[in-house]
Amino acid sequence: MKIILAFVFNGLVIGYFIGSWYYWANFTQTPLEICNGFGSLIAFLGIIYFFVLYFMVVKRYFGKWFERSVWNKVKSVAGSLWRFV
Image 1 (cartoon, rainbow, N blue to C red):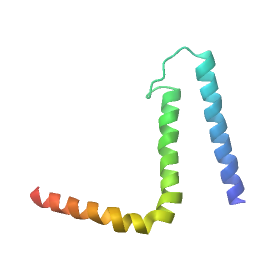
Image 2: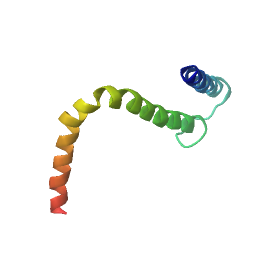
Image 3: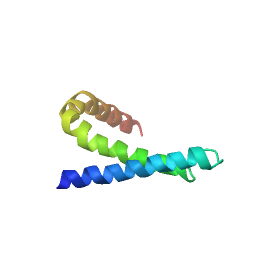
């Protein structure tokens, strides 16, 4: 049931996005601005879906590899930079 509700909710969100895109492309003459109207919807959905994909896919399946090969190196470099401050 939880998976079905997630698919329905995402389908509604994507449907609303496509409807907004159609309306913006065919009925409005305003330029695409990131802080107003359809542009803010793009920014908001982009941020939300980026983090959903990160936590549901990347962190789950590549988390240990990422921590070993990337994050530990970043942490050591950041720690050495903080010594200078």
